[in-house]
Image 1 (cartoon, helix red, strand yellow):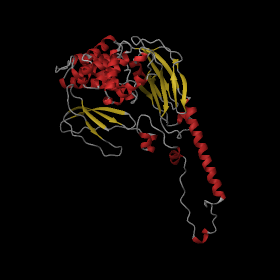
Image 2 (cartoon, helix red, strand yellow):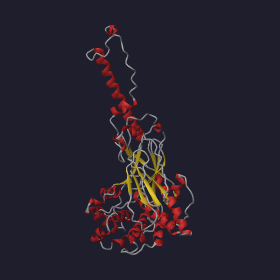
Image 3 (tube, one colour):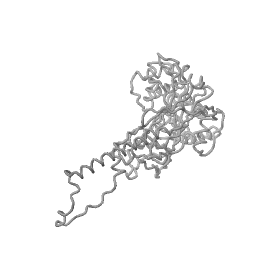
Image 4 (cartoon, one colour):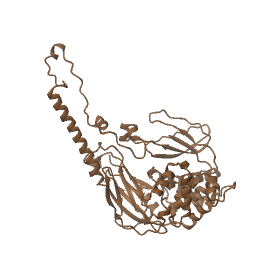
Length: 468
């Protein structure tokens, strides 16, 4: 699916264009008025690519997305949909991988057929022995592959926890950064890492846990996890160390964080040398808090119609910002996914709560992102007033300087705000240091979006692809 949205001005109300697109389809043409547009390509695997284009009057703007072939494409819908891909049946895999090509049948003359031994007589003893041996060998090989894929491969996962802090006055770099340098800019300088313990869950998944809880103060430091999957892929993820529960029966209690590592590709298409296989792995930070994970799930999937319960929970989270400011930011995101009327019915001063979250916790990127998104949607104080572009710019640039968003949805929301700002600057012909800072900030966020793993509640970055 391709989505095209206008990106020329902050106050644009143009509807988005959605076009279904197949890999083998001919190029699709969309009629657009002159201006700037953001084009997003949504893939069945959950990946999202985004590029910006300029459309001139009477001209043709052409955009090409490059998509690498996945081994999962061989198995169709059984493995290509969803963020967690169930493996196909082993017999299906073996039909593609282990069955040798059949030779062309030999045609015997009629007068020689009677002389040929009937090796394929299903009633013969020899045929029964051969078929029994074949089935046993096939089951043995499948079990061997499952064992290698699971117990041996998952155990090769490695992870470290880093404690970092960012410099809020650092400059915006110019140009494109390498993935490691980009991560260092967003997460800051790290202390000595601590190796995470691996606790195997089953044959295809495990948890990475800290050996001991760290004393966390989000006003000063943050925790991240550096994960290396068995296939050579590396990830850098927000590690929700120090997460305080906002549930009524556990209010303020620190819950256990972890990173769940799961194999999400076919279990039979693996070999003993796991670092040379094409398996995919999912690294998902989690917290031992069912209520919190439920709201984050609804927030990520966009199910704003989940009901009054989730809306009420979002208000509770925002109200309890002194207990858990990151959870409060998640609540603010959820509220901004609903209408202002629905929020006002529960709490008329909800906008003040978002403002207080932004001001009381100047180290939380998601608080500044929520403030910028609220300003873009409703203005500084609501009503029909015009948007103060410079105030909006200040919130957005501060959000970038605060560092990597805790929640994956924050990367997308911050991108939308900066795209609108940069487009409005060009449309109005603005210039100066702040405008240049906006341009560099947008470049940083777009680079971040390219390595952000979609489908995760907490932000996960993919630093290197798996080895093929």
